[in-house]
Image (tube, rainbow, N blue to C red; front, side):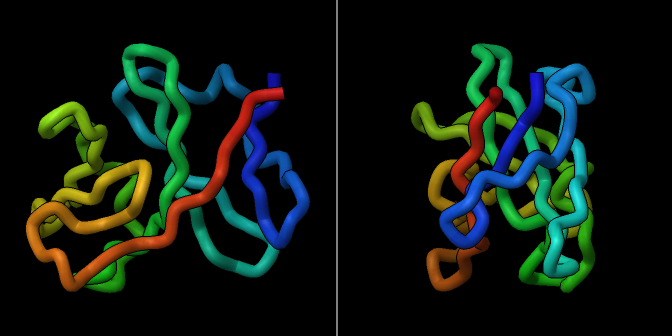
Length: 107
């Protein structure tokens, strides 16, 4: 099966589902040069967030650790450890910062 992201009202294939391991991220290059970090949690839910860490500018969120806080899945940046809600992109440690999220599906 293929993982797809919704980009500009069209679904774009980014990777085979076999590349996703629950709890670990995968980076994907998008057509406009941006990067997305894809995750699958232990329950099989898929998430996609911009791979760029807004605090450092480094494209590293796909290497972050996922966890949950009050039932919300998040990824913790491997650099400064800020946590980003995987559904909304909101930083759980600094409410003034957020990241782009993408609609994701498996076809």
